[in-house]
Image (cartoon, rainbow, N blue to C red):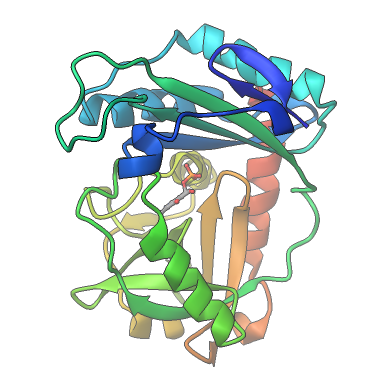
Length: 279
Ligand code: PLP
């Protein structure tokens, strides 16, 4: 695999980053993951806008322009002959002698790599458990400090389940690496409103727009695990997951333990429009 590191396209075995890199020492870094369909980047403008916002919240700027960054994505897709999969991008504050204070002069580290994998097959749905949300308070910034969600995912796996829904003050915030939704018995799509409690998912924004355009009712508010367990359907969204049905929550089957029609329809719609607008 050919990866990108600080201006160079190199075989992954040859790519290196300093041991003093603040991404490594402090998780002083942000990232993005975008889907690739037909060799093109899905929802690129949304991802690059969020990258700029995440960097800004950490008092960093963009390492280069949106257009140049798109070119790096495309070049990596070409060099790896990738048709379908994910592109991971990370920007760190750079390498400097270890100190909690930000360095005055450091050159940002920029790394991108591809993960080829099929994204568009039929989904059988996932089983989730609920766990306390142990993450920091700025989940709207897409930082690489992912140990809390990683441990939540492992706790779900230890119970033979697929993922966890995180709960704070009695309400679901989101999944470990996705936004969470229910469909009420009246057919209304409910997902938590945007705040610093959740990541502002790019797929979330696209799916809510698609739903509204199709005349589906959407309500942005917090919901509890109990409400979700009584819902007609549940699902999650993320860049490379698209719309994935949730078929069990804490041992309670949702929509008869099978993917629900609203989630399946939204997944098809998202893939269809994502393909058309991919760059
Ligand atoms: N919430 C969290 C915590 C995530 O890590 C992610 C994506 O990785 C999402 C939501 C979904 O965001 P997006 O649709 O932009 O991939």
